[in-house]
Length: 78
Image (cartoon, rainbow, N blue to C red; front, side, top):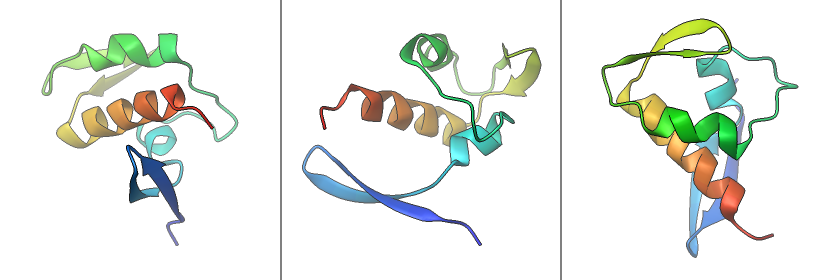
């Protein structure tokens, strides 16, 4: 079963799949993303190929939106 999580972004509550970006980029659940990890990925255009931690991936629209969401959630204050 897919675990969902509710987060607040810009005063709006949204529901996301937990660990979806980790699963999509095939990293272990213990991996912690950082802004320097995600910043270069944000510049990759949809449809282009890229490498992340030695693995090849193709940027999809869904992956792009998950990367942007993760980056934005890192910048918020708790």
